[in-house]
Amino acid sequence: MTTETLQASDFVGHLRPYEQRLYRAIYMIVRNTDDAQDLLQETVLRAYQNLSRYNPSKPLYPWLLTIGRNLARNFLRKKESQNVGFPEGMEVISAGHGPEDLLIQRETSQAVIDCLARLKPEQREILELKHFQECSYEEMAQILDIPLGTVMSRLYYSRKKLAELLQNHTQGGGV
Image (tube, rainbow, N blue to C red; front, top):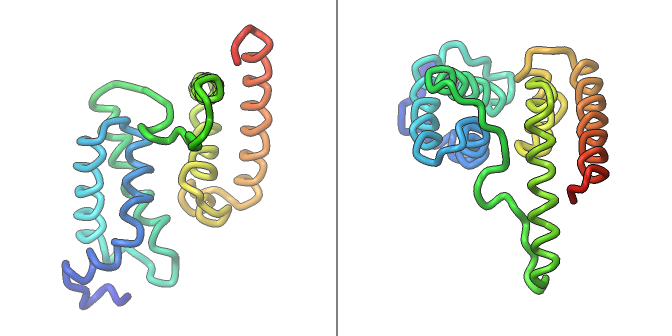
């Protein structure tokens, strides 16, 4: 993709493969479908306006995700809200499970949501990038602007802390 001669329609075509992932990432931050759609459109617009800043030798998705996440965070700052959790429909419900299994699955999902909310923002962020956005270590390093070793270390300690919180949650009468 050359940044000099790219038309708006061509640019949007290049973004199609990333649209759903980008939408989910933004939704995870703002927790509202309409706001996430608006911010996705704003992300595309900003990316097109700043196309001269994109380095074509680097992957496109981390650059787009950085723009989208920054817009979403700025949006939240304006709204002064900090909700954390899974987006609608993230629960995986397999066909054939009975009501008891579904109840256990919902309780487990709620326990994870509760424990994620208790993590430090940088711990929650690294887990969301890895497990919800399915970013590679290299993509996370680029998005967070930290060394690869720091990504691996932060991910390890974030998982460890989440496991500890979940263990305490289950021992405290939760799931």
